[in-house]
Image 1 (cartoon, rainbow, N blue to C red):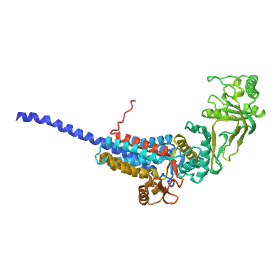
Image 2: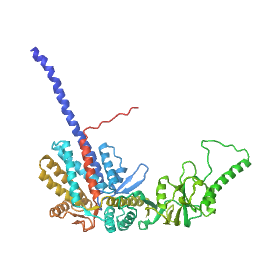
Image 3: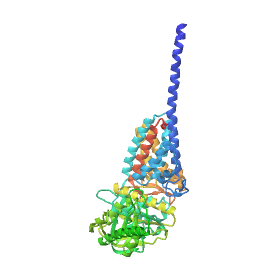
Image 4: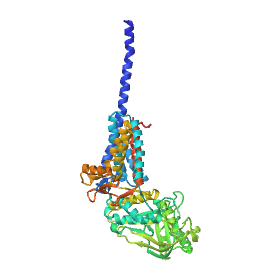
Length: 538
């Protein structure tokens, strides 16, 4: 009796401990499901923007500014995403934008489909680590499949570059001008790319966006285009000698806040006379150097150039362009082949650039731009002047041209193309499904789910193009089973056709980057089993 009473309390804590352990197992499942649902919500938000017939989003910020775009990276960047797991998809889109420049919507949609597949696998009590490892294996298999589909590309083939650009631009607001923009971007890249080193620095392509005119007026400037007006009366200069100065053409100020008390007008006259003389000496030094076009860097200390200095320079027929940004100085030096001048005593013949013509061009908007043509000793740089009738269209054209240039950068880095229109994803679904049957077991089951998730791209493309997605995806499966691995969705003809023959091509790097980044993000989300909030110490 006594022994029984003594033993009874000893068993109670065991039961409580068991309950606690059971609850602890429940929590990671809830956290994981919460993360998956939040991330899927973000993917669903941009899904309707996928493809040539995708919808645009109107984004309105706190200040009332409106942005109209269907670029995945831009939409997610402007969205207020609070959930930490959902923010991972915003970072995913940004990573794809940096790596490939295109496919920012696709990567998020694919990630959402993979998360749905992971959710179904978790509901079958498969361990998250097992799913994570199987997905990584599937991604490795997928890259091999994509590489077997590649179409070799030669950098001297401008026509193939234009086709890749046109595919990228087909889903943008400016798709009606895709031929003109593709020609322009391809010409720009061929001028600045280094084929031997497989590199292209997009900083060598300066984009100047100006309201006024239409998209048809967008042009490639063989030389330099600056988003600055000429000051004063001199607006055109032939056989120009250009100097880029980094000192101020204005009277000096005291280092600290001091007050100078002037008692009579003679002292005032003396101060003004000294200021005039100081400015005149600087202007004479510039004239003596032989420079007749002056680029003045923006100053944060005081006015970069005074009205008096502009007056003197105009009298001497010297053209002045002020407010050159500090970040533009390396580009200008590379383009013009000049050196920045730090003070009036440092002018040398090497610091000046020789240009056949510098002129201010009327745009029609609030401000004009300045063009430099016929640059001697010019560097490998170009400028693109984008024109549009309003700010929204101009901003979208700027983003679209940046995406097209990024596509060409991918081709310079990795010279291979693959078919677009969901052809790659349909082939992946078929080949990974076959591989899953060979492997069998839990890994094979996970691989099968991964393969099925790939079909979200052709399904969404068909859905957004107002086609019957079930019919289209079934037809795609049939074609790919017959060995037509370039078969994809042709939204122009509202059916399935050979994407290679239709010239719908995209860089292989876009597809491989999408698979790798989407799989990494899904694996990261699956590994999270708790969210810990840290209280800041006040």
